[in-house]
Length: 393
Image 1 (tube, rainbow, N blue to C red):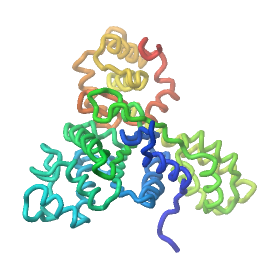
Image 2 (image 1 turned 180 degrees about the vertical axis):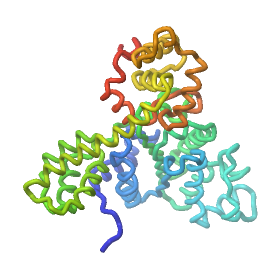
Image 3 (image 1 turned 30 degrees about the vertical axis):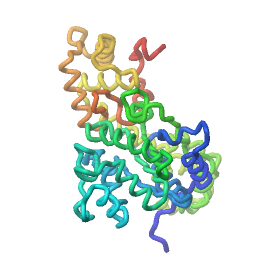
Image 4 (image 1 turned 60 degrees about the vertical axis):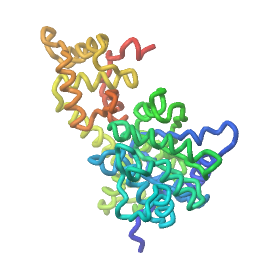
C-alpha cells in the first residue's frame, strides 16, 4: 500500500500554463514574469509542486522552486538564493564555468555563499552570471517558481533579490542565453500586486492572474476516492465545497471525522457529511474570530478599518484616523475616549503583525495577512460603516 497521500491532478491546466509560460510569441508577457493569486488552502501550492513543476520539466526546462512560507523565520531573499544555490551545486560544469568567469582556479561547492550585499554567489559572482551559467551549461530555460512571493518585499534583502532577478531575467531572455521565467504565486492579490503595480518595483507591469479554484472535476474525484462507507453525490458536495470557500481541507476534515462513525449508512451518511462540513468550516472561522475578539479595542479597530479599505489602506491619513474612531464607537467605547492616536495606531500595527493578522512590506505598506480574515470579519458584520470615500468610489 502506498504511503503517499493521493493528489488530484490538474494535468490539462498544467499543460496549458506550461505552454503560455514558455511562449515567446508576439504579445506574450511571460518573459516579464507571471503572478498567480489565490486564497491560501485552496490547492494553489499543491498544483505548483505536483502538476506545474513536472509539466515544465517534461517540456525541457530546469525548474527551481522556492517556498517563502515554508520557513517564515528565514529572510525571503535568502530562501530564494538558497534554492538557486542548491541547483548550482548539482552541476559541476556550472561551478567550473563560474570559477573561470570569476578568475578563480577552482571554486568549492561547499564554499559557495550568497553575499546579500551583492546578491550573488560571492564577491565576484552576480546572480545574473550564476543563472546564465546554469542555463548555458544545461542548455535549458530556467523557470523559477516563488511560492507566497509577497513575502519577498517584507525585507530589504528580499527586495534586493527581486531586483537582482529582474536583471537576471533581462540578461537570460536575450538572444545569448536560453531564457528565464519567473513565476510568482501569492495568497493575497493586493499584496502580490505590490510586486508589480508601481514603477519602483522589480516586476512592474507583469501580469497578475487570478488562479482558478478547484471545481466540479475535483469534487468528482473526491467523491469517487474518499474512504467512506456510503456514496456522496457530487452535485451536493460541490455546493458544500463552495460554502467552505473551496478549501479541500474542510472536506478532508469532515471525512476524517466520519470515518470513525461506524454506524453510518447510505441513508443517513450524506446528510451527516453535509452537517460535518459546515461544522468544520464554522470551526475554522470561529477559531479566527476568537483571535479577533481577543484584540484590544484599538487593535480591533485598526484591523477592521484595514480590512474594509483593502489596497487603499493608508494608516495615518486623517480620513483613516476618523474611521478608527467610528470602529471604536461601534465596539461600545465611550464617545469621550473613542479617539485614536497615532502612537496607539503604530503600536496596534506592531501587535497585529506579531499575531500574524497583518503583513507589512519593507516600504511601510500594510495589508491583512489572509483574505480569510477579511471574509470572516465581513460575515460577522464587523466592516459595516468603515468604508472610506476612497474605497467606495
